[in-house]
Image 1 (tube, rainbow, N blue to C red):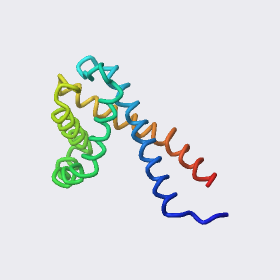
Image 2: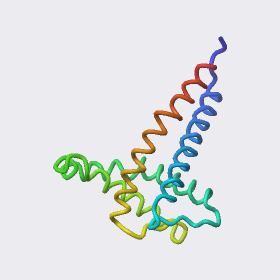
Image 3: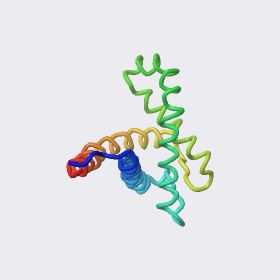
Length: 140
């Protein structure tokens, strides 16, 4: 069996990241259709959804760890429910950056959306993305 090169590992990492982003974009669009108070600009729905998901990814890697450490005592006292408030903060940051392209009109619905997106992302990751990546890596 040939030895894996650094280039191949780099390319497979990019493909894996892109697959995650596409799956999360599907979740983002589905959640957008479920709630009337969550508005995504229809002119370029897929592009804006993909951009929002990339922003969410970047914020989850940079800002969310800081938020998590700052809110850990409150999260512990609420038995983990405050964690979804951190997700709400990330979603509001994305809304702020994307200005008129994505809009959340209600905070209670935003809370439900953050819970639903966490659940759907977990399901899609474990049911679709990870098995697909495992299957692709078995062919290497």
